[in-house]
Length: 147
Length: 147
DNA sequence: CTCAATGCAAAGTATTTGCAACCGA
DNA sequence: TCGGTTGCAAATACTTTGCATTGAG
Image (cartoon, rainbow over all chains, first blue to last red; front, side, top):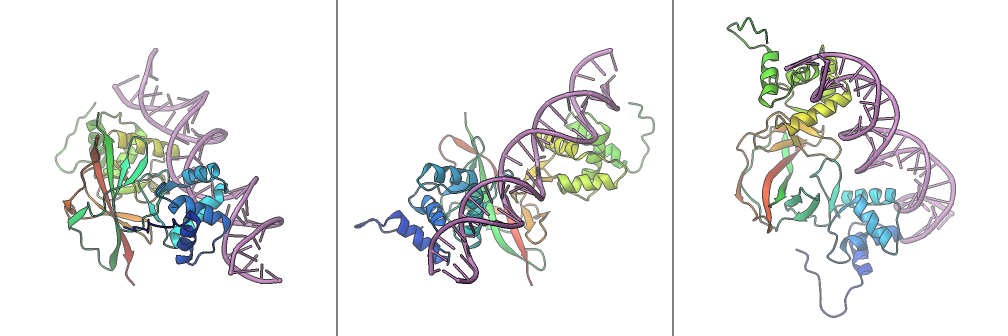
């Protein structure tokens, strides 16, 4: 968990976003900063779709074109700043938490939340087929609201 | 049903497909039978996309329109004959094995195979958030070819 | 004969791409 | 300045839908 400094002078959201981009060697352009701020500026919005991030940007002071949102999300992901979560064939979700963890998928509203870190543990995993190695194990826990 | 000869030996692929449809209360139309045969007629083609099944049908003696393939896959899935596998945001995969099991996803060629049954065991799973229950736990093991 | 199922093409979504204008280093 | 970025619209998947036709019971 990235427990950031809370005390004294609060880091402006922009500074954090700048560091985030720099850590991946990405140029801090206006649009990227705006999106980065929305993504990691505070605790909100950790799981986004292109559409939801686009709306968030539009609502905020720095509107960005939808195509750029798509391209930027992809760039961030390729740079290792985001992870793509595959839970629903129709949309791509992105997560600002790139550490290994499972996800809850709320079937009712299509929302995604994090499963508590370390809450999924494997007792046993298959041996990868010959000539292959396990790149990643994705776990999606589908939730249904109990009535 | 003019089922005259029930002969001894091997059930024709069609008979199996018919039973499969009947078990879900679905009308055995020509197209459904053709697709069902391709899906469960023999051991092949357990994991399909709309496209791959469409090609298979096209190659075989009973061509079916692509829209019907989509609609039929959806109907089969809703009837519980298939499971939809979500591993890649861009395409939907369907599996004729509806039992609970994990999947290998070959990142190189986008192919899906079954992980051996029972090869994934959980030591621990999160408690579902309040008011929710776990509907299903999807496990996708992403494989990368080792060079 | 009747209503579900099909076929086709057109309509939808979700996402990518081409290319000129732009801007950060 | 120079090459990486952006914006827009058009292009590209993938999938669903409308509606007339077909066919199973």
